[in-house]
Image (cartoon, rainbow, N blue to C red; front, side, top):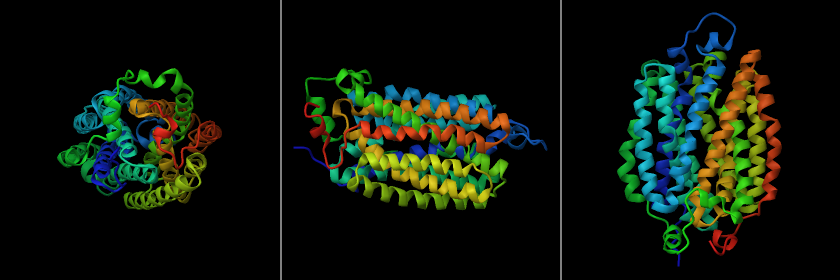
Length: 415
């Protein structure tokens, strides 16, 4: 008999704290990207993006793509949780990720910063993936979307806090101070260790005789079709979210010259909208289904990302806020669906493949978006060409079974 928890029990809240710590550490480079460009580049009175920001969009996009690609190493880290346990790998990755990220604050040049920050990225990416796996495994179908939404909210709170701190105190802290603050969440690790427990689903799977090889076991023949569709969905949605979320602050501060206070207000408002999106997404996922809710969220993300870069401060604010809301709608359905489609023995490895596909999609999106923006000194064209074509992939949700109201054990009785 599995011992399952409510979505607000300590077993879930512990991984929410871990996700918040990962968000706080990972989002530093995005929030402080304008300062990074100014400190390591040179601003002039010219009309190009490089003149206005300090570094060109293609150079920034390449560096950010390297940081994103480093998250590929999160695949083996996440997969190891299928062998050594969710709790063990969660604690290892959160400590290593935050420590290395904080160390990037002393980087002597732009590419040194990229390399050191990139070394911490896979650990924090693994934390976020494992947090959703644990939340899904600790809960029943009636609480699962709520638990996944809470983990996503935790990550968003951590990321938003970094953005707010930078917006209000960038002149005092600079990018080095903002990135160095990644060491602060390490103080929460003892609490996370006390609250997080090994899910009974994993304990039962570990006691079985069949132990698929971590990472590779997830691509066994019986899992292959589902995994391929999941990977394509993760790739395409990240082609949008990667550049849309990463360039937004440098676009706001260095191109549109939005003040720090207005940027902070935009982030706070977007945070509230994201919470509303999570609540709506959770409700829709449990009533309308995972597939239509995920597709609706994905289409909204693309449309509002184009709006954000269509020109002018009002469009940026509206597009960014509504885009975060659409992301909130997408997250509970997408997170629950991915964790419900596969058995416990390979679930963490599947989370790693989802993560890797997202990393590759975001990297492609960053390079394409940055190159297009540089070519015409126009973010609008870059957004339309990069975001809208991949929106059609939302139809792939109907190539997967609907998991609403079902336990993973029902979908994979032998798993």
